Length: 219
Image (cartoon, rainbow, N blue to C red; front, side, top):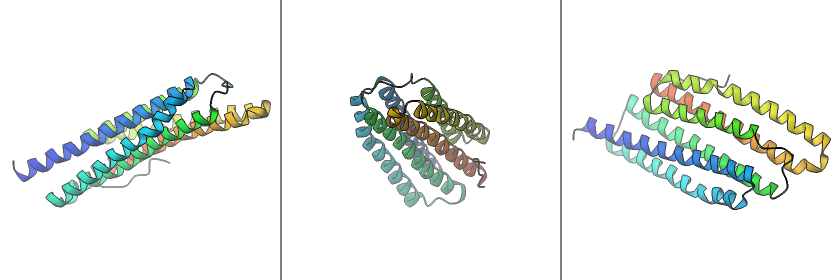
């Protein structure tokens, strides 16, 4: 196997490790949301405990990247591919942290009856996860069009976040005794909004990967 083929093979393996990590993060987010809706505190605890696995996956990616740099001494575009993979793995790890935070909010609410049906929050979550899937597709295929389209959807999540927070604040005025639960649900909305921000960062890194230029897609 020549040097170029060897590098491409190792880079493909690095990308696959990143996609596996993202898949695990997505699963954690979904599991955390199920725990919130069903008030399954055991499931919430499992999400928190499972975060170690995702941290280990990030460490593996870091090790793969360091080894690839040390063995292949990549320059220019090749080096950029490795650096971007590292940056994206960091964003994915932070997304996984949001799953842990949602699980913790679930535990704080406990068995207290929900003040309202949990419907809009999962819809907001699904939008954020769709963004994540698109941004990772953009990374794998090095497609800036998909990356930009993914980042643009963050506006929809921000709008949903604004509406939900306004509604939840209304509940506090009407039912001050439910302030603790409302506050935790507002935190959950914030965590999902943060997922959208992290995905936007992934999209920016994809554009940097392809073009070598920095773009701010958060404006």
